[in-house]
Length: 146
Image (cartoon, rainbow, N blue to C red; front, side, top):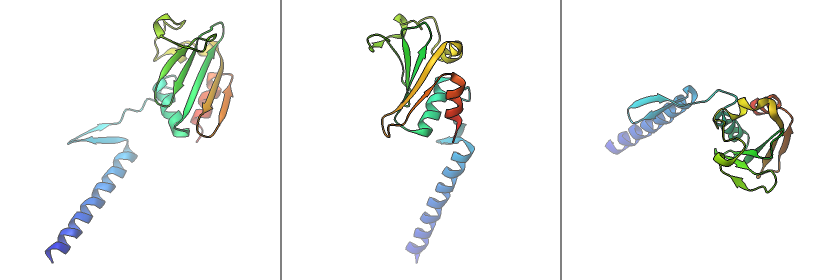
């Protein structure tokens, strides 16, 4: 009899934990030991973090290429959060410090250069879903679509 009650108690505890996790997810909070802290969600549409989060919601294997007017270098952003600069002629990785973007902050780069965007290409390595945009606003609109 005790083992049946113990089993029922453990099952109820597991159910309660599952419900708590579901509520935490819906409320956007995370329980770290005994402290409940809000999960950071960047809502700034110009932030690379925002873009990465929205890309990952669409497909886990997306990469975005940002090409700018009057610039050889371009920026790549992957769903794993990597923000890289590539040389437009040789297609090789370039460090931020020697790129044409060296004077700009990586966290605000898209806001600062929004008017200089020539083309944005989104490439998927999982299902060959490719998209191309001529403006940042077009790109953000597509990102925001369910």
